[in-house]
Amino acid sequence: MLLRASSNAIDAGADLHGAVGGATGNVAHGGLLMAYAEAANRDPEAARALDDEVIAAVGEAGLVDAAVTVAVFNGLVRSADGIGIPLDDTMLAATAEARAELGLDSYAGAANSRG
Image (tube, rainbow, N blue to C red; front, side):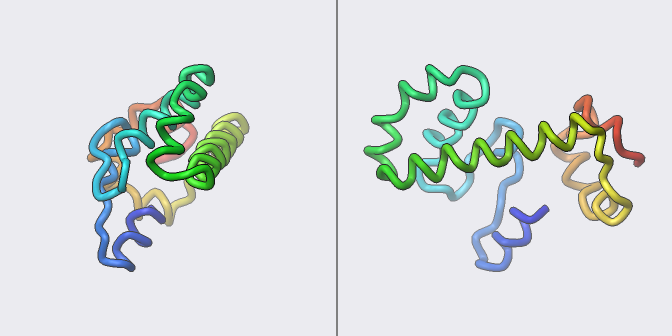
């Protein structure tokens, strides 16, 4: 939801399908960064193997930003799912279209929320 709002604020648009393994939109080096993020979640050694390529594309600071972003999102989602935090009514309503479009309600964590 925030990605879409911030993208709209700068007239960049957002393709939310990237969040579930789809398009990488207008993000520079999006394919490489998506591959890095997926590897970091599934196979840390594979992510390390991409370090030089990511540094060549976005610099050392960009690699650090990518690693931190993966870690923060991973930690927040795991914490919320682990303790069963449901979406509140406002967020359920605001994200209904995006959740349906992306098939997010079929994920196990969706059982924590009404809707």
